Image: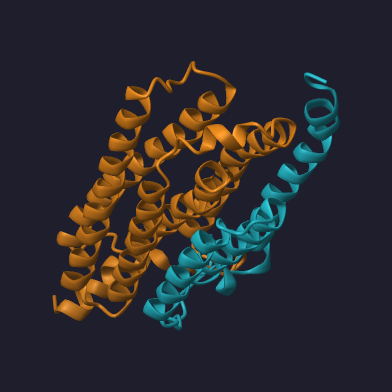
Length: 98
Length: 198
C-alpha cells in the first residue's frame, strides 16, 4: 500500500519580479554582444545565460523546493554532458580536420 | 458538491508519496526531463565542440536574424511567466484565471513558432538550407528539435486546459508547466549559441 500525505502548501515567489530580472538579463546579453573582446563577450554572455536558466529552473520549475533526489536527477544529466564534452573534446577540437 | 470540495477532489492526485517526498506525477516529469537534458545537451555539446574547432562559423552566425531570436527569447520567457501564474492560480483555486493564463501561454507559443517560420523562410531564401554546411545542419537540427518540443508542449497545454475547464486533474497544470519551462531553458542556451556567437 502506498502511503500518501496531502501536498504541502507551497510558497509562491514574486514571479513577475523574476520575469523582470530575466528581461534585464536578456538586454544585458544583447549589449554584451557588442564588446570588442570576442572571447570575453562569449564568456559573459554564457554566464548571463546560466543565471537566466538557473532562475527559471529554481523558481518557475520550483526545483529549489524539490527533494534532494530530484535535484540529483538534473545533476546526473548535466554530469553526463560534462563527461560527453570531455570525452569528445580531444577527437573533435584537436584531431577532427586538423 | 461545493466549488472548494470539487477543487480539492480534482487536485487530490497531487498527494505526496511519503517515501519519495514528491507526487508521482512530478517525479515522472523530472525523470522525463532528465532524459531530455541528455537529448538536447548531447546536440548542444557537439555543436559547441565543432564551434570551438571552426572559429569561421562566427561569420555564418551573422546570417541568423538576431532581432527575431531576441524577440523570441522575450516571447518564451513571457510565456513561462503566464504558465507559472496559471499554476499559482490553480493552487489558489481560481481556475478561470488559470485558464486565461494558459491561453496566454498558448498564444505566445504560437507567436514563437510563427517568428521561427519567418526566420526559416528568410534564411532559406538567402540559400542557407540544412545541407548548406555543418553550421546550418546544426542550426536547423537544434532549432527544429526545439520547435518540435514547443509544438508538443502547446498541444499538451491545450489538453490540460480542457481538463481545467472540466475541473478535473488540475494538478497537471504544474506538470505541463515544468515541461514548458524546460523548453524555455533550452532556448535560453540556444539563443546565445546560434545568434550571439558571431
